Amino acid sequence: MTSVPTPIPSRTQFVLEGIKHRILTGQLTPGQALVETELAAQFGVSKTPVREALKTLAGTGLVVMNQYKGVTVRMVDADMAREVYDVRLLLEPEALRRSVQRRVSLDTAREALERADGATDTAQRSLANREFHRALYVTCGNPLLGRMLDEVRDQAALVSAVAWAANPSWEREAAEHREILRLALDGDSDGAARALHSHIASFVQRAFPEAQGKGEQE
Image (cartoon, helix red, strand yellow):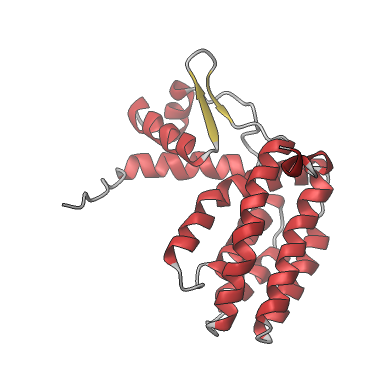
């Protein structure tokens, strides 16, 4: 008999989304301690939903739970960036290629790109960019492939937030996004996939040059 996943209680979901938003928009920074009592007071809930939310976030790789140091926002380094972006390089261009071949609507991607261009702060731009990338792969026709990319999506956004804080490069990335979408709208599945691969690879090369070459040496 197949087990049915237990729904996350609404309060836990509320806290989960709130903490995640703060992490991915830079309000909570890598290495910062996440104290249950403080978060409970901020969100107006008991410690139980906070504890459950933190467990879920630990499972997605956004926070780290240590019995001695407590819970902290995950640190971002070259190794972490390489691991996350290696997965994206392997899967995301292929998912986009399949989406284009299926001739699905790319209206959601276009709308996300417009929101990113019109964003007034880094937080809005980051969230819009995440939606842009997801809109390109979620319609690939393989739900498992989409879920696999969803699993690294938050970690990729954390890497981007750290990189942008050190070296804002969103204008270049926005231009690359527009080219990827143009190729996809033209029905050029291989060209769009190549452009997306180059976009992902060039970002991690600029942001974490020390990450290059490590994979081949291990």
